[in-house]
Length: 309
Image (cartoon, rainbow, N blue to C red; front, side, top):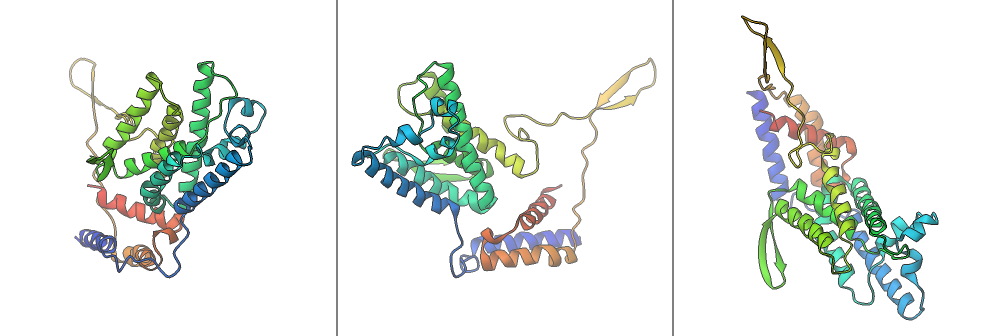
């Protein structure tokens, strides 16, 4: 009974903190947000790239874009530099990626922390870049063709958001029509659109790079939770262990699954006061960004305890 009461208190405090804007207000001096910093960096890089390309006649894409020729020359830094270049002079390309970081990146960063957010973002760009280069090699495309854009990294962040908030619905404008959609449905549409673009190529979009980024995002979520990358996704589950039970009569056995183990949640007042309350108070005063890795693990463990039957 005591454990159930503490769980109810824990749920109530979390719900209050999330819903009460005054209680969850940002402290004086807003914390650093890598997602917002990336938006400003992408905008600055776009401006510099436009000036150098149009007025300086500098071949920025050739020198900094990702190409098989560059990788063959061991210019590994292109795996990062290409992620900060976009089509110029029209800003539609960079604006679309900036909007992705703004609407999805901030939430993902608050959930995973700045370090993990940056790792997922940059790793999505790197894996997506390699995936696109592999496709170009398989299709015997010229080695000097350069890939640019932050779309692979943004795709990884969007995939993480959709997995963490699979059943959450949100609104967006498609052309001129308002659309309401669940996050997991939006993710499947992104995957389907990228596959369609690969099967029926007719644009300059690097669909394989997008898929590479999505794969990174999809596999990152279970890894962050300390699980196998395939667990809980696409139907992959750990195989059920079978218990062999001897039966009377002729020599034979019956393989039956074991009864589900039901663990009673164990949490007491001392645990809540010692571990949970300080963390909740820290969130209230300093925001989610202030939590350390250990504090995030404590909250995750507490949430898992609540979810257990």
